[in-house]
Image 1 (cartoon, rainbow, N blue to C red):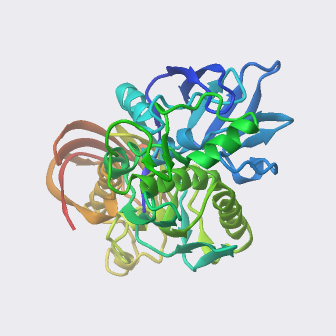
Image 2: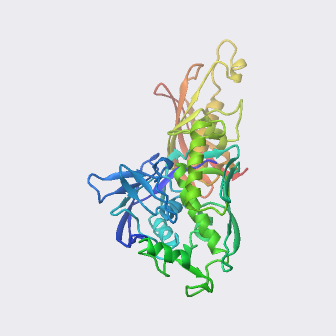
Image 3: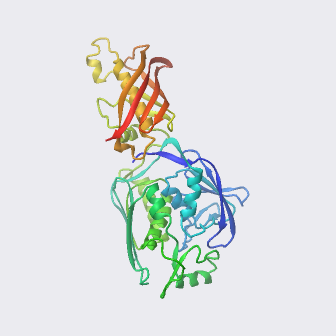
Length: 436
């Protein structure tokens, strides 16, 4: 899977009541630079304390009904709904300022209110590839009847089974290929739920002070206590998918794989997140991670269909979404075209310089669409091509392209090729995206 890292276009404020504390809370969601990740910032503490949403910051104090993070004795509780929203909408980088030890619970107990705010401010692609945790071998966790498995999969899929003795919940199953559209429509609207016996127990422990029938579905032996119907016939298992989506965000990077969960809750979800993080650190052969700051050949070959001897770009150094791109091609004497162009006087063919320029531009175009590996770029026009200097073995060509126009699947770019800061070629290129 290939996509750019993403943040929100501008800050927004969300205020409400903490689910367990019952306190009034103000939360400010802020854009963050690439490779920041999701960071909670306790602004009610001096100096402010940042708590990254990563597995090594999971609190060792097990709380059965929420997900808790801690750093330098500062704690933030009940972060799963915010994390699920970020993950479901594919937002990689955020700084979330909170003036309490618990962010506000969404007003209806689902992620739909958060989705509304995120969607209103909009999203920004950041020109840096997202670093996926790619599952290449099965990873399993089992304990006390709970089963969690991560399997290789071309995409991100969650399948979940719940089993409750209460007949009004019973056994439910759901499975989704998770992407922003599916998350908004099928997962985010599902609400927190609890058995009435658990509600009484949690209240006796001084928790869920901000809980009510407005922000949770409550079930007893007689049925559902809330007025109105469920949002989905299997709303309970959908909310479990929402929870695990938030908890697995703590792996620290998006997952490429199929997650299968049976009877799992926050405690087992968090243990599984730690296990996946451990596998990523210790078994690089089992779980592969992409580059951090640039688009290297491993990412380029996921986007572009070209292969030896016709892949003519080695690295993307800069990419500004739908605006500009900078890439390089290292020219070696082993290039196959030098055998005949020309013997004893090797010069890179001008047509291949233009082809390499077009490939760099193609990455800019494809990086702007979802699942770019499913598309091709057709090169449909060249204008104003000029060749100023020859390119020899040992040269490194720097290609700089700017998007001049983009209409649906058609674009025009202005490209320049440079060696040692000197222009060797330039052209205007027209391309289109087609299904692969």
